Length: 91
Image 1 (cartoon, rainbow, N blue to C red):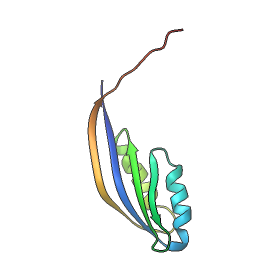
Image 2 (cartoon, helix red, strand yellow):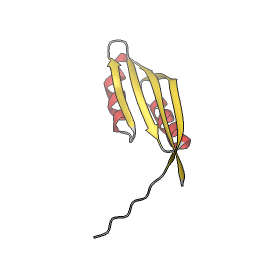
Image 3 (cartoon, rainbow, N blue to C red):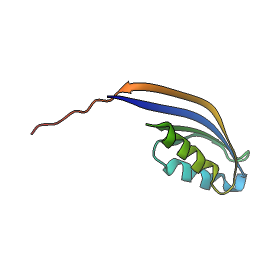
Image 4 (cartoon, rainbow, N blue to C red):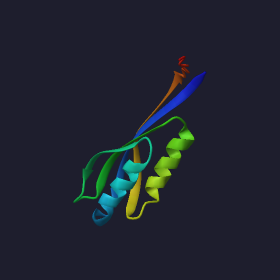
């Protein structure tokens, strides 16, 4: 069975006073990581990955809707098809 894998890099611009809360909220989502931040400038570099484009877009939209977030810019996106392996364990 063929599955998809998506990864993207984002630049999130937020109000400096709200940057810590935004970083915490983004990091708490599955497949999301804040790779770098500049609190004084209110900027986050975010990496997101997901199994489907719909899940990836949902995570991007959730970041966009956070309190204090001014803009979310997509910097990089990669999509790959990969074989899905199901291993069974026997006892």
